[in-house]
Image 1 (cartoon, rainbow, N blue to C red):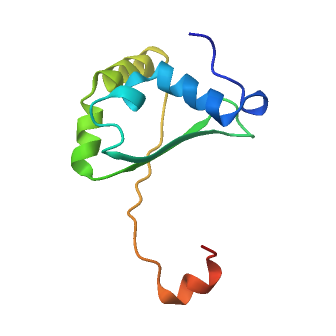
Image 2: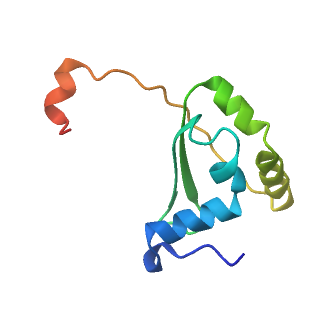
Length: 106
């Protein structure tokens, strides 16, 4: 497996192929498509060592199953090995108030 494709010089298909090959649980686990509603990576323009991962999950049970996967064990060991740090923010979906609908183009 080679290096991750550069954002500026690759297509979204090439980047998705890299992710699904590099992290099989994302593409091939017995829950994918059932528990992950959205999963996408973004790189920072200001800091090339910062990556933003946005996940949307069906429910807490799906997140717990994902965290128990072998891929997460690998990621955890790599995080320890390379002293990687992360910030986690949690958001809960809510209905859009009627007063804000005029600002949203659907």
